[in-house]
Length: 350
Image (cartoon, rainbow, N blue to C red; front, top):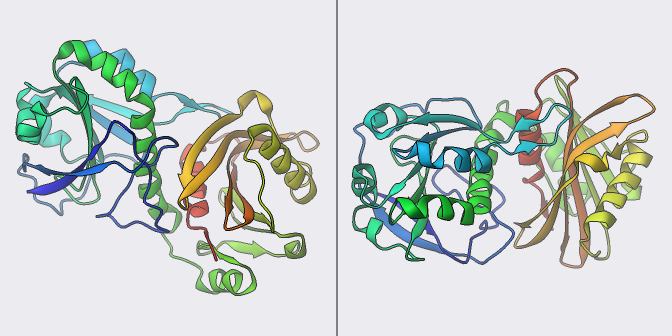
């Protein structure tokens, strides 16, 4: 028997730990409060825990016997384009049915979609399939269900008529949950060679924060007196900056975009945000609200650009802005963008 978590009607957000482990994952959203309830589930597949997961990073394996009904809704939720110079869907999607579940249960991220009377749902959820919080549908997150380093997200409706309305109602929550799972998994890729201990300790010693510097990345402190430091890696080019002020700011999208443009203009040779592709989210980070901007940066003088992600938040009387970007002309960039966001999320103020 293994343990999962029910995502309550109020929503849920991350426990604000600096780094998670494979057995202690969490999902984040900008609304609602903590809402986890322990859920005992039944071991279904005969795959022994410890078998290596299958499938590429950012791929979600959707298993449903109602695909004809939910096809367009699931695609709308999972494959919204992420603003990059060549837009990419946020998640890759593999689709299967329950009759081949022994195979699909070995994939990295499994998204089960069904009704409470489906044989697969009865086996997985047991009596929980009949105790849906809103009376019509429920959402569950399960770490390491059938193999290590795996997540299962389970959406169940009381009957087929509730599938599409329930998926629409939970759409943002589903996306945020899966985004968090992917961030945790891609953090391993960002630190596959480990952490540069010397660079990390130097930043922690000199400033009022710590952030894990990936091995083979370099740190630039030339503008530390202006409360701006950054680190960067090559192949492809990736940058992460930290900026701070000894006061707080209003977390207003256009104001934060202006701050980001001002900093990039001064320290990144005139980079700016392309407003056409700007996306705004509010998330929880370090136990408080955080404005998350993402989109495309551009440098009109050099005629270059790429994707970026930016966090702005206040913490204990200070304002912080964290920013990650990718420059990799002609290549797909989303995996690398998620990796720089994983680096950003190792940030801990003191």
